[in-house]
Image 1 (spheres, helix red, strand yellow):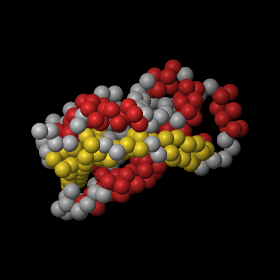
Image 2 (image 1 turned 30 degrees about the vertical axis):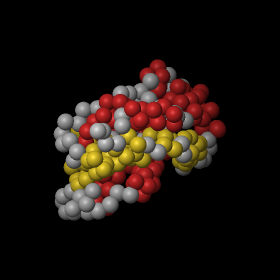
Image 3 (image 1 turned 120 degrees about the vertical axis):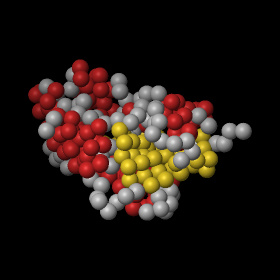
Image 4 (image 1 turned 135 degrees about the vertical axis):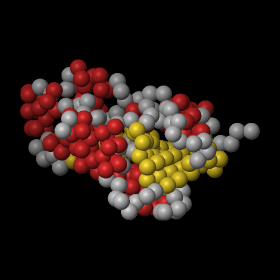
Length: 251
């Protein structure tokens, strides 16, 4: 098994936190039977399959992700009886495979903070959405200080990884949605992370960052201090940026 395949497998096993947050977003947006849903940053496909049950046989779910190994797992996990889910490798800033005005809901759960050119991605979402379509997004509103500190401890690779997060605060996100013609409702909810121990936290963070974080890069002395600080559970808090947006019709 190549290393990226191993990391993708680990993501499928450890992404419970993302799945739970995604379920809450799905409930908020009100996805219903018959909807066609585009899941941007679908990962290993668990939420896409969850949405497929909601939209039913008259609906459709298209999952898109840049990580080919995650897409492979997603494709492999679709039961033969499920025919309303499609997974494709692709980038949110260039979704040529998605027809114009073909989507009822563009859904993205904890993926947009990886996208640097959010204007281009939102323009693509706008193009794909039907005139009465909805864009539902939750992303990191901030890189939690704990995550930043842990990542910095991993040295040069950690600092490179931090540059790949493109988080926005409420005002920044509001402005970017406005200029891309979405009628937006942006909130800044707080949430908690809970892990049984350091090992489960490190496994989740490595998988979430596509293997770009590695606990092996943390010096032994620093790792020893972390073990002392967190002998059992690892708990910390942060904020997300959540928005449910209507497509504004241009005249």
